[in-house]
Length: 344
Image (cartoon, rainbow, N blue to C red; front, side, top):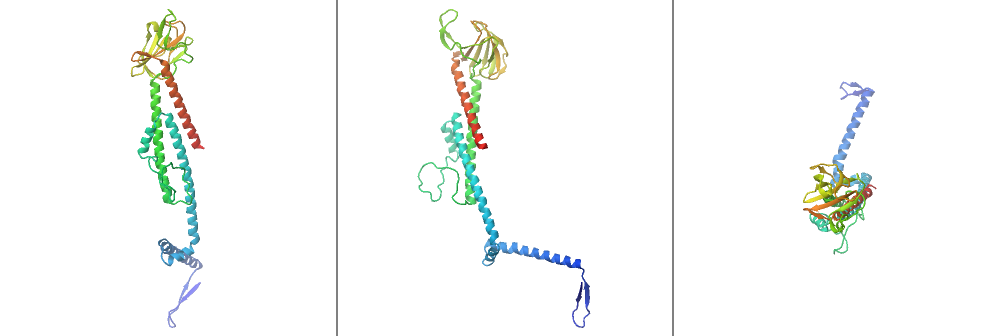
């Protein structure tokens, strides 16, 4: 392709030869520059005019890009609706967790005053509920339930509800922490207090006055007798330290455990002792074997509980331990059911 360039009738004409590839590259560069220029003008001028509401330009831009704005608004509304539905589901789950927390806290022995103290410290239960716009009546009465908006909520409304959910979850976490602490306290208390029968099976002779099997006279029986074959394992009724493990007159081969605070358990008439003085034993650990040593008419375990050296009725301690075991198992089952519901 030849291009002739002249400045007048008398001027010398110049000739320029342009190859097709050069022409194609030049056209491409010009097209790219025009696209960049148009994009810059669109983003810098027209979009700014649309956002800031310039009198004439913004109206023209909105007419041109109306479909784009409508699509963007529809997308935002759909997202807000989905977020509102999710927030409502979260609120329903939080309400269920609060109900489970109330039941478990009752089983753990937490008093209502303690929960009210948590509420007074800034929980949602202590904060008065905000009445909705247009709600009839401003009197008392309980309020609650999941967040189900009548129309598409705003970002501010969703943020407010999410903030309330955050406070509610913090409060629920505090309640469950208190429940866990109380259950651990009860467990430790149960471990240090005689709470499990040292030998499986029924009691042959209880605590109190009875006819002595040797002389036939009324006498105080200071413990519980558990009839069992010789060699039957004997468990520690509570955690403690071995105080003594030796023959002790009428008690025969006897074992005593010190549980602190003046509380001692005694296991008498043993055939064999499995622990040594000063040894720390766990609750439920095998510590001896049933025998027929000392003042005994047959193989059995004589079990005593002494507080400050004074014999106590072991049945009261064991019954209390059974109650604590039942409460702990019920609380664990309730928590398991709550986790199973949350996992559905």
